[in-house]
Amino acid sequence: MNSNESKRNRTARWRAPSSCLTVSLALALVGIGQAAPTWESTLTKDPPGDLPAPRPVHTTYHFGWSGFTAGVGDMHFTKTADKRFQLEANGRTIGLVRALWKLDASYLGLVNAETLRPIESKQTEIYRRKKLVTDLAFTDSGVTRTRTEGAGAEAAKPFNFPGLFDLHSAMLYLRSQPLSDRSVYRIVVYPATSAYLTTITVLGRERVTVRAGAYNAIKIDLQLQRLGKKLELEPHRKFRRATIWISDDENRIPLRIEAQIFVGTVFAELQAMRFDQDKT
Image 1 (cartoon, rainbow, N blue to C red):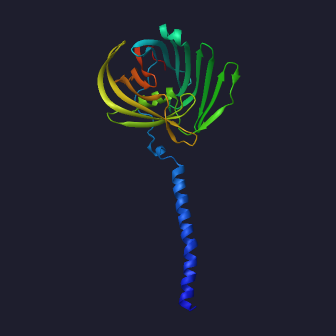
Image 2: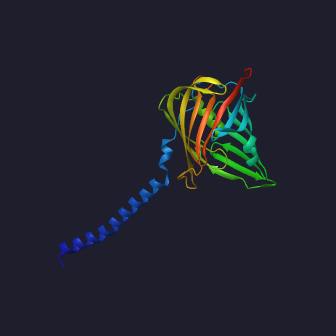
């Protein structure tokens, strides 16, 4: 074997493991890229907007399914002395629906009035044969959930994801934004037992009439995707999408919600509204 052939053989032997290493590194980089969900880069990072703080208010809603009233609910929004926004809500099924499906529900949520981040919430559901209590405690890094059914409580379950909202704080944060036509907001909401990528699209402005009166309204489309154990996006098994109308003023009160779910269309509509004297 001459010196040139020997050199070519040594080069070939070096190139083989080098090529394998290159491929391995490329595959590893692809794996790293897939490990971080790409949807995270689409989340809205804007701070709370400069809309004036919401006023303390009592609201009453009627809930319906397939064209008839199925339930009622009362909500009281206030600001506490220690700079927290507080929402107390109570609801129940009524009439024929109650005879088929008895439910009494209550909710208490606290939100930091400056950052509009959730602090804690407590949700109670009383059915004909069982009672569920769900407690959520939020931090900057995520949420810890504790659920009690009857006399037994499950172990606390943490879900680590920074920047989470609950339902109350999500409404306050979105309310604070400009909500210009065709704008899109994406946030992660943890309402009770799972986290959801929530996409809100402002469809436009229109005039709507509800039980409480006629209002200029902002029309919003809402879509949900559940976050799996590895933060992969999954379709919501029961919820398809919802359309929401909120008052087009500085109060931005929810006026009507129509949701497409697995049993058809359900709705919530403002029945009455009364503002408290503002507290400082």
